[in-house]
Image (cartoon, rainbow over all chains, first blue to last red; front, side, top):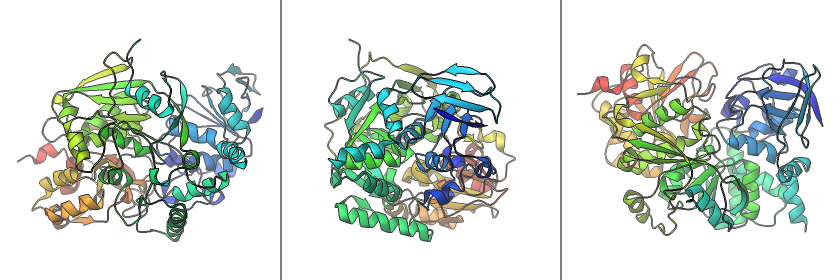
Length: 160
Length: 418
């Protein structure tokens, strides 16, 4: 079960907004993460807390294939992203690094509301009393998320 | 049984299954491309603990984003990748400014029709112009590919865009692509394989088709493809590429269609800050520009430089504009040098820099200050993409960019018709 405050963003939040290309010569994720979302929400890194949930509109994560986009959000403590739709590379990257992504329209919720997500049962519930459901990820991808991502899963394979 | 799509056929062959649309398959890739982010991929590869890469000959590495190194961090990243390539025996390694990965791979004969190609760069879709199924992936997935050669793919639905008619004078495939994205939106082809067909595509050069496939990602597509014809075969034969693997969608395959007539196309511009914010160049003629960029994996090929040079020959660009010219590859650079195109562009006031991604992603070679406006032949006009988040980026064809550099304001190139 994931539970956290929500921060809301609009449609087409692209990967340049999540982490601008001008910083990508540096591969140290904690350093990079200090610039997360700075071109769209300069206060993001100071206000986000561990477990917080991002709620967005259509096509979240469009643009570059840069995996640093979901990595910096995870590094800053984001527990899940719920969007009306995702761009496909971002969606794959998030799952592969173990950051839960949920396709659902929560744009009517208020910022600061507390949301809980049950990934395996596909349930969403807010502290303000709102409830909804979504189609859970296929079992093999849920398992990937539970293991913490693709690396952990492959590490097991190469241990033997 | 109904017919099968191109995407189905490639993913079926690569996974050894009879895949249906919507199935998730585990496929073996034919080629895996990475650029500087190979530094990140190699770190993840070490975490996985695989003893060796799956096939060093199927991995291609290209330095193009920050070449020569623009910062100490970039130099450290290059060093990490060089050491990794050396240790793992990766011989297809273009590290001395050969050009942008999406131009270098076809030029060097790595791209063949029907191949399943992945790249840790979103514009990997460019290789679809040669009939390959090519798609962008992330760094962790690439590390998994380096370790195993395999990756999971959902077999995508197909959208076929039928482009009838002939492009009018002074319009280019970039204008057509901006029109398509403007029509269907920045997520209008999400997750799908886009097939470009029709008279306009048949008439196009390979370079022009590369623009269509390159920007398929800007409408969310998983892949874009132009099916091989004699032009494709000539290009590939000159690079000793096998033509055996050609695959085409069956005529009765299930897919969505969208038809458009290109004969009334006009020079277009994508205004800030999204690629689907498209309007005519002539409607923006009061917009002054500070920088014009001619280059990128979208429009840095010889025909693009020729188009710009045709407007700038013997003229001088506006003194208030910086024109940055970035040939897409060393091969393009050399041809443009030999035929005098680079001299024409430099004499007109252009700054010719070495082949690479240049300022497209805001790494170096011409960043924007706050309040500045650029017109560029690149592929993304996202806020902050080319420097300051307070700058504006307009996307257009090489002709429109050259005309705008000349006038110092956004200009429909037809105004310069002689």
